[in-house]
Length: 127
Image 1 (cartoon, rainbow, N blue to C red):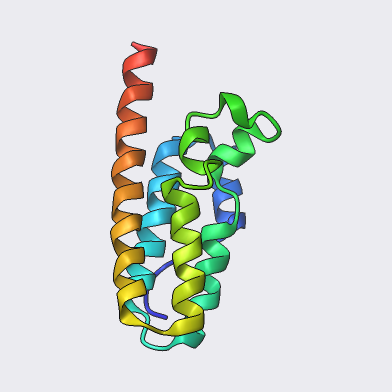
Image 2: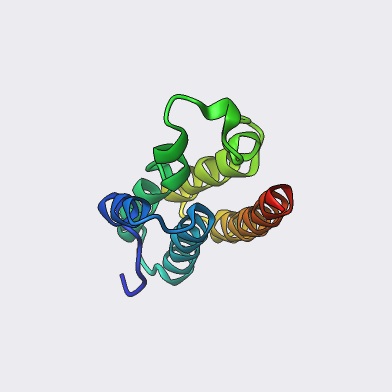
């Protein structure tokens, strides 16, 4: 796999250095999107799914306090973008049908757009 997935250890390290949680999360999901787009064999999908399902910087910050996390609405909703991405990844892994790969990529793009919106909304609230 040519593209770069952030490991959980890298996320923890960057979190501890005080990097912006949104920036870490956006980089994580950009890596997932790029890796998913570039994959050539279904056997390359497992690390991508693992990365998508692994907690991120916001999980470290809010731990057991999901209700106050800025991403809670997009993360926990069973019909939300994040849950849809994970479901589509599994469907693609089991079927290999390109249609599901394309749908997954569209939903990842949507999720990245939502993250940018959440980041801007959070920034406005701080000012």
